Image 1 (tube, rainbow, N blue to C red):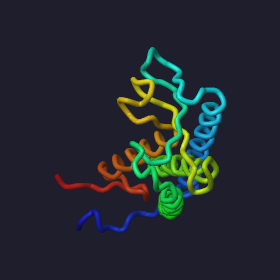
Image 2 (image 1 turned 135 degrees about the horizontal axis):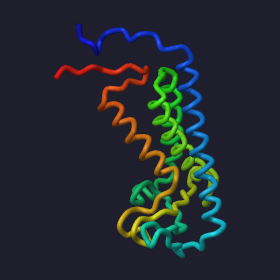
Image 3 (image 1 turned 90 degrees about the vertical axis):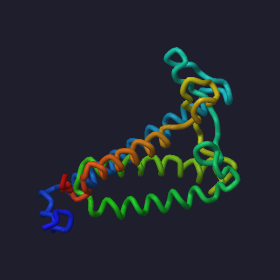
Image 4 (image 1 turned 120 degrees about the horizontal axis):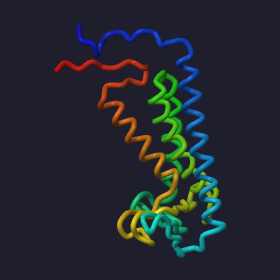
Length: 183
C-alpha cells in the first residue's frame, strides 16, 4: 500500500486549537513588530539618511516603495492589496486543515507579513490601495545597492515561505503526519 494515499490518523486532542493559536499569535506578533518598527522609522530616521548598525553590516534607512521586491510593478500599486487580501483568505483556508505547529508557524509568518504590508498599502500615502510600503533595512550598503531595502513584513514573508517549502520537501504535512518516501 502506498503511504501517500493512506488515510491519516485523527489529529491528537487539542491539535487544531494549538495550530490556530500558534498561527494567530505568530501573525499578530509579526504585525505588531512590523508596525512598531515602521512607526519608529518614520518618526526617528530622516528620509534618505542612513543609520549605520553593526559596523555597517546593516543600515536603517527610511524609504518608501510603491512596488514589490526590486520595485517591480511600481506603477501598479492597486494590485498589491488585492493579492495580499487573496493570500490572507487563502491562509485562513489553509489553517483549517492544519494540525502541525511548524506549519502553523510558517502560515502565521506569511499572515503577519502579508497583513503588515497590506496595512501600508491601505493606509499610507498617496491613498487607499495606492499606499507605499515603508522599508528600512539594508545589508552592507547605506542605500540598498547590494540587496533591496526591506522591512519586517518582507522578512516574515520570506522566512514563512522558506519554512513551508522546507516542510514540504521533508514530507511534513499540514495535518501533522509525515510522508514516508521509498529510497
